[in-house]
Length: 388
Image (cartoon, rainbow, N blue to C red; front, side, top):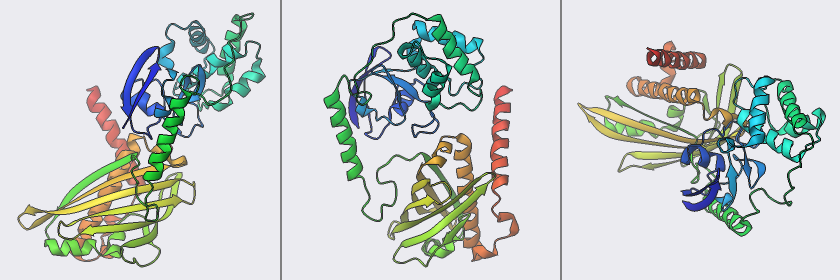
């Protein structure tokens, strides 16, 4: 953890964060300023836009520690701002918002346009707004709202221009450079040495765990888990590319759920602790369809559960990056991942009881749409129970 001190919405803030924590997560998770929205997490959509030292910036691609000494203003910090008040009114009058997800970032960018370009016309406003994406409005109402405020402020003095340079580097340039260097040092130190597998010290954005029991001897279950091809047949969509060699595995995992299709190819290394009956898999892969990457660490262990039963515990921690990462924060995706893990557990339990996964009954076949439907149905049931 690294200690940081910065000013957020006019208040001095002191705290600590991992060197890889980006500013958006620090604002949302540590300071509970959830008006800053996260979507693409690649600096593309603009939903996470805040002011850093007075300039609009993507908080999802700025490290929190790199903002040491900076002044940060989120959407919550504009309550008494006259220009923002006019923009909020204009957005309402021109129907410039629908779902509202992009609105905080859009308002921060719009305020910068109004102050920096008082003579901008509609064409220039469209260019300036190009970095903020909206999937609802068609942008026409947003452009009208910004132009409306520009017209109301005709003759106003434009905001002074800051010097060129990285956003956040005005107040504490030395501290910012040191913080970035610290991030680079941590990144270098955490790089895995064996084929760059596993998380390598990176925080996961997908996690799930499960446990189940089987009535088989401990030694037999441990031997089955050492049979990698046999275990791979229990994983939905998994295919080995070649026979395993000394715990090293290469293969692919393909899953298609409606319009979302993935085809991850990669490698893994399995390390087993025979005396403790525990093991860990370090894996990494790349999706050939979207270019997304995934890293994972899967730990598993056996323990007696009484009455000649063995308890199997499995934990998955994964880091998804690239276009598919936007789904990583969805609770539906988290639940779907848990159900996929449950499907693997059922197949593994079946092969332990009957000898081979290939002889599994038809009802254990992988049906992703059935899983998605079940997840969504459970969400609606949960909402209905809360409503009652």
